[in-house]
Image 1: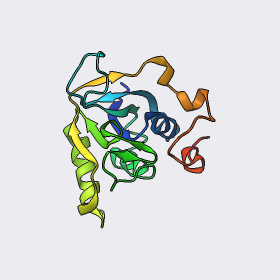
Image 2: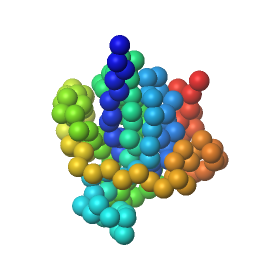
Image 3: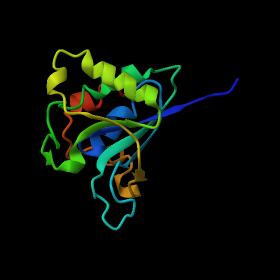
Image 4: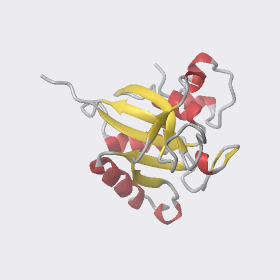
Length: 161
């Protein structure tokens, strides 16, 4: 029997907190901090239109895309444009990106079914680019748990086993 995993990219403000939260979700196999959907693929201007995000590799037999999106909405303010907590700027926008159109359809449906759908500013777009962050940003809150984070600690570690 072949094992298959899937990837979705979640942008929810500063990537440190998003990675720390997502890594502990049931069915998540791996996370990687990075930047998505920028207009410049070089590292020369690393935030040229990019959103800070976390590449999330998951087992679709253990967690559904809809569940991942529901968890994701626990840690973001979906009404805030280019701002999460104290972090302000285009790179801190919220977004759900994927190369799999089914993932994007689940995200759009999830948003449309919410009573506040008309106020939600979360991007739902195909992934066009992903650049991994350097090692100092990978697993940052695991290595330095006292670092500042826009996600409250009780939520940040809600699913930590």
